[in-house]
Image (cartoon, rainbow, N blue to C red; front, side):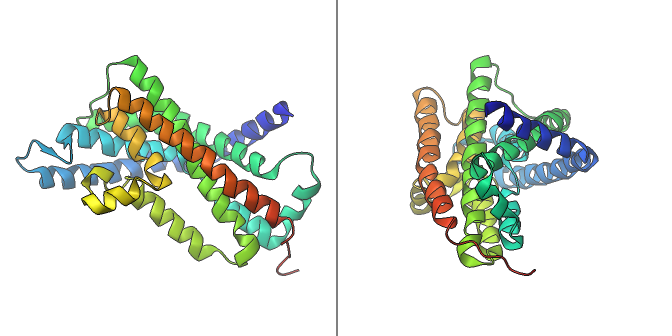
Length: 264
């Protein structure tokens, strides 16, 4: 069975490879995004050395790493699942000898590996040539960052699958998917680092899973989080991964009694 799931990863990777030109152009689009944020934050900092616990150099690195990390963990599994539910093609998954939800996660991983190798890595090199990015010199920190980035993928994918499965109950969950995407981008620290939020809102966000997607790994990479706090924040990611398994499994079990096909 493991070989079957590995084949799912390989097939999704090859499918993405067929449209790789789109991702090469995406590097330029992301570079423009990162460059825009850099000049905005440069103006905000002005003559100040540090804001929100980050220097301008750390902020530049944070923005670049956050956006390029997003290229790895981002996927459209919620929309794929919702479409399969609406057209009824998900019905065949009930009788196949594998777990539908796990297959979706493997498809997302195949897409993520493609994005990591052909988008994130070359994109970071391209941005590094243009902006003053500060890479950590400790190899161990790189290892920890990639472990945390993998958990970012898992948590974001779980949220996508949960959102997609709601199509069984809502018939049309387009609004929910849009709301989820805005919430992830805003509350994960992608657009604004969580350390920049007011105290009361920062306290609320620390109880939500979104920070585990972008802020925690990026803050570790830039040195905002260091020492024993790194292990603690990795533990937060692991905890959210385990907690999100519960609604994902419950929704999938309940969904099997809710299938009906729209259209003909």
